[in-house]
Image 1: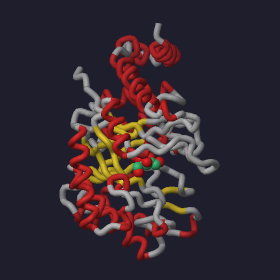
Image 2: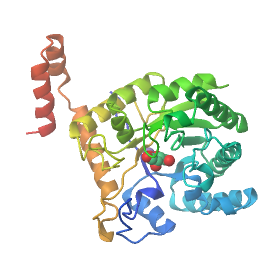
Image 3: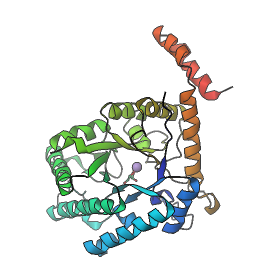
Image 4: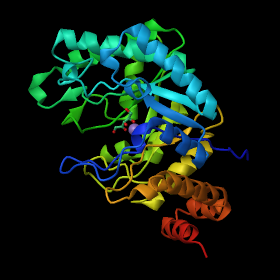
Length: 345
Ligand code: XUL
Ligand code: MN
């Protein structure tokens, strides 16, 4: 069996400062060069970006200025030997996206979302990637009667089509999440993401990004989402993290809440050959609020450590014993075999 050498990625937002809806920052902000150097120190190969991570205060800048700054960022990344994996339009922050971007009930706001998305594709090109991530944060409803699901599906497909037409090399990765900030999101699962691709001009250029916590929030097992997406050759990026039940999106270190669920995600990645076409393993994790400045990198370091330990567990899994138990439908002993394997000697 081919052993994939995994390559890792994180975003500047993963060095967050501890703010939550109930309290302010608990750690000082770090500069972008500090974050870049931190990734390098950790041995990560790539960085993921929102459009305004790449070009801060993006809305106050001309298109030419935005592209100039993106080019400068590319030089900075090249200087550190770090690659840009993806760029995602941040369509949930602006006063112009209070009701969503592509599905907003305001026409001018829908146009803003489209223009910003096309610009994101141009930024990605400058950074040397064609991969665009769409976390459709506010494409949903606060109130069921405020939008029509049929019309919203049409609007989302039209927005995807406009992005595909903008750059024939762009590939769009939909990152589903079922709720938060919305009550209900229109693209809550990988099934929805892959289905909507077929309403567009070029379904081949639409894939997906699975985030463990988002699948769990949808009441699904992320390992099944991985197997499903990879059966279609559609898993182009991943955000590994963890989530303790149906709460706010927790972005805990990988394996932190449920080691067995994490193990099964790693097994699914291994059996489908994730990473062999150049895909990165990204950790969309945040430090705990109590984390002090000197431990700023621990959540990333630990997520990678757990991931690699689980890769070893997947590669040393007692397959023959497991297969015999499966053939006998002896799931009682299969369950214990998995637990013993994870617990070790
Ligand atoms: C939000 C989330 C985002 C996306 C990128 O829950 O996961 O950070 O990964 O926009
Ligand atoms: Mn994510």
